[in-house]
Length: 141
Image (cartoon, rainbow, N blue to C red; front, side, top):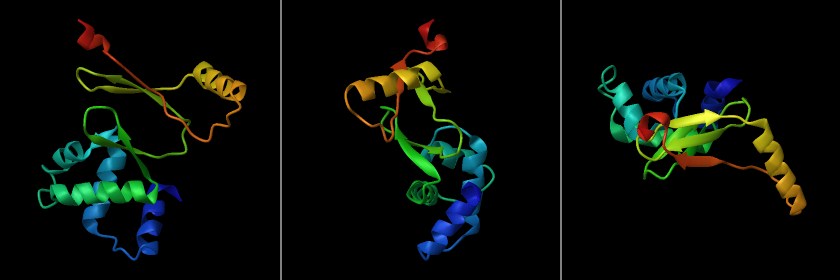
């Protein structure tokens, strides 16, 4: 079905309208492929769609999270950022505390170690998130 179809189904189930503005915001969000704050997405849309307001972008991102097509993330900079939920492999994050750069990574050994630690402690992991904070190469110089 895909994320677009999932969102359309959610709107129908909630008795909400599918609007052209929501479609434009969804397309821009999915096309960006990065962790976006409301402001970043709004600024990305504004040159091409000046009629779409900040509050509309904010409410639509909240709808994306409620529908399950996006996850709201907090990386310690005081802003909520949104990331599209996909069927891709789980990934973790490296976050630069200076410039705010976010790098996604996957590491099979880290995943195995987490599972091992959980087993040793009698835990069954149902979900997890690993965010590592530090300085990116550019900010270290």
